[in-house]
Structure formats: structure tokens, C-alpha cells
Image (cartoon, rainbow, N blue to C red; front, side):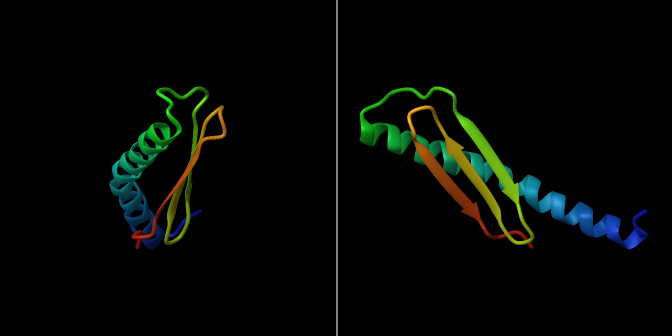
Length: 78
């Protein structure tokens, strides 16, 4: 059972995460496109994205079939 005060803190945390997700997705896309250009590739297969939420950070890791990996960290969560 959670106390009444915890709900407002939990709601603030999830609001910060929801506000940060579009920026994380944009950064992942930008870095993946840049890596594809560098390697002379034009597509990805079996792309897996894992997003981990910490107390002060949001970390996203994208890995594809051809060992193409990108890590994005957002540390503005408060």
C-alpha cells in the first residue's frame, strides 16, 4: 500500500520520463542514420531498443542484427 504523498512523486517521475522519450527517440534515430551512412548501409534488420529508467537518468540502447549499436543517455530527469 502506498502513502498518498507517494502518488504525486510517482506522477512527477513518470511525467519527466514521458517528456524525455521523444528526445531519446530522436537521438537514437539520428545516431542510427549516421552510423548507417558511415558503414555504407541503407537498412537495419532485427532492431531491438531497450530503455532503462533510473533515478536521474534515462538510457536507451539500440542493437541490430549486424552488430550496429547505439547508446543514448538523458540525465535531466529530476
